[in-house]
Structures are given as C-alpha cells and as structure tokens.
Image 1: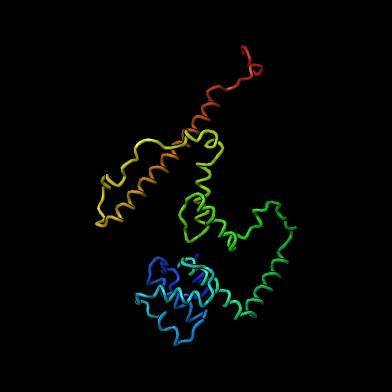
Image 2: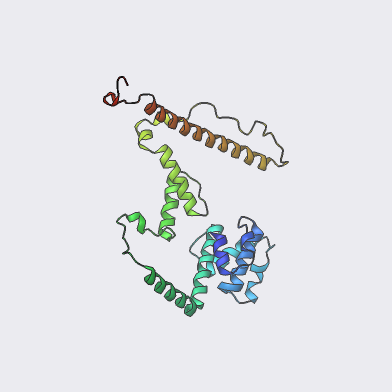
Length: 249
C-alpha cells in the first residue's frame, strides 16, 4: 500500500522503500514535507531533515501534531495518513487536470455501458474498507480477539477471519474441549535448523517458517485424503440397472 501511494506521488525509489527501516521512513517523511505537504517553511524543516538526530521521533511527533494528523503514537499509521494527505493536496492543487480526467472517464463509462448496473442488497458490498470507522472497528475486533495489530488493517482483518473460522465456528462452540490443543508444546526453538545463518534471530524465523510450511503440507494432505474417501464412497458401491442387460447372443 505504501509503495503504490509513493509511486502515485512520483517518489523516485518507490519500489525500494522499506518503511520498517528508520532511515527509509525518515527520508519518505521529509520528501513528503518538501515536495507535497509543505507545512513548514524551508528554515523550519531543519530538525526534520536531520535524519540522524536521536530526538527525531519527537520532532516527527511534533510535525504530526502541527499537520493535524489524527493518529497518535503509531508511526506507520501516521505515515499512511501523511501519504493520504499528500495525495489529497496533490489532487487539490491540480483540480483542472484531475477534473478533466474524471470527465473523460465518466464519458467513456457511459459509452461502454450496455447493461443496467445491479445494486447489491448485501450491506457488506457498500462498506468503505478504507474509512476511519472501518479501521477503528477492525482494530477493536483484533483487540477483543487478542490479535496483534498490523499497520495494514486489512491484514489484521484477515487474521481475525482465520481465527473466527478455526476457533469460533459452530463445531468449536458446540464442543470447545475437542479443539483445545493439549500436551507439551513442540520445542521448535531447541532443535537444529539444519542450516546456519550466523544470526539467531534469522535462524528462529526460519524455524518458524519451516513449521508453518509443515502445517500447510499437513492440511493439504488432509484435504487430499478427504477427497479420496469421497471418491471411494461413490466408486465402491456402483448402481447397476439390470433391465439393460441381455442374455445370450
């Protein structure tokens, strides 16, 4: 999401940005201020431009306050808001260009429309999945389910969906004890990974990925077995119409 917005704004190295890297993060912020937002005068951007300053997070927090960012104490979410704000300013400064593009698009859509549009009665189809209310609701649900927040609220929502499907389905609610995992946890961190990355953090991450891969293979094998059982239930007891048979030549 960050990269798509940076590309739309004309950021040169949009495809190389890693927002989890502090230097990349700070470079994007000062670029947005210099090129798009322009909240401060050039002289007042001095502290924000000092990317190696230890107190830069405080400077960034003050900047977010001055630009009236509604998000507090969440740098990635604040950056997402700044990108959206920059896009809004870009559209506002080029009203005539964007208005002409919108007019041409609407005219093209009218010319290509050959069938009436169907309006869905499902309220979920009319939701704005990027609105502030939807994001707040998603994170509230994640907090209720004890799921960690991800900067992208849609990924957080996907995690909530998986938990509900696996742990809160009708079968689990009828017999919750059958779904509770019991026994001693597998000591994944204590076993040898089979390779050396010379960094404990990378080796632990690789072990977790290997365990998740094994789980995916196991789930795939379970589905294959279920398919085989269903096919066998059909082929093992074929129905024969004896009236169609012929005796003799």
